[in-house]
Length: 428
Image (cartoon, rainbow, N blue to C red; front, top):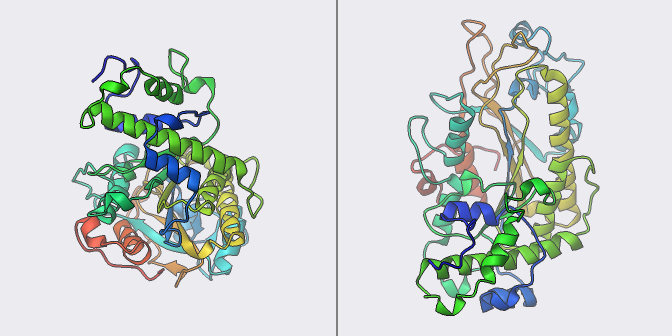
């Protein structure tokens, strides 16, 4: 590798992707970019993939409390386990005679009534792990609890979907985009794919490194390094430089798309999560070939004083998702996009002495879209527990949700991606 690399240039592919996905800057390096990328940006040619289905994955980081999201208000065990946190029949938004949504989910409730919000109850996996890191890893790689995989389930989807693709017809758009600070493990793959990251908010000084440079500064310095004439097309230097140029060109395009976007619905202005979804809507409306997007909402680790914090989180989630769906509808894109949530685990059925809930196992998840066949699936959790400290036993394996999304939405070989066959669910 050339000595002209800046000292803080990433040294591994994973570090490189994480770095290049963390900032948008003012870019003026088209003259360095591969010609096909520049031509694609300038021509803005219609994409042959433009009408393909798109999946938006929303992470509820920290472990969402499912029992106070989809509330079994008619269950006496629920009120026994949660004497202070339990929500009454009068407080919830009723789905049926047994279940209701948390009152902060007003917008999501309207979508459910309209057939655009599906609820899959009590989703989990065998031998659950209550560690944030490990359980997130299990959900993002779709592994067994006692197995470790180096690739994510969406990364394997990309490997599967792109296998045998003709390089001459490969899109210049990213294969996957995340609105977050780091590339999610869900996107980790065996093959190389263009993964792009959009920051949740404009760069601040805190995102700069000790040399007071942003990630984009590092790329720009690399692009200006004087040794380009000595690049070997097959060297690591050439590979990294081509990847850097790809990131810079994409960054410029994304920046223009976000600046020019006029949403078809009002997003909550005080809701950063909603603003992240607005960015996703902008890129979808711009006709990116990208099939998968990832957005994260954190803060669900509610060990103490949960009631108010959880209400605020669910209001943030509800307002953001509803604005996103309304925006897609206004742009005629609602039939093309499916959004689904996931969280690494639910919370314990019993509240703790701090007015919160501790790490648990299963929880419901949401699917949002205009093409849903059913809007309430899965067996509700059994709350007649052998002891107050006991936990929920899942009734739907989360990989059945993935298998359904892969098979019936992304039209991929779900069994090959997941490594085994899981039941498909009836929401699609």
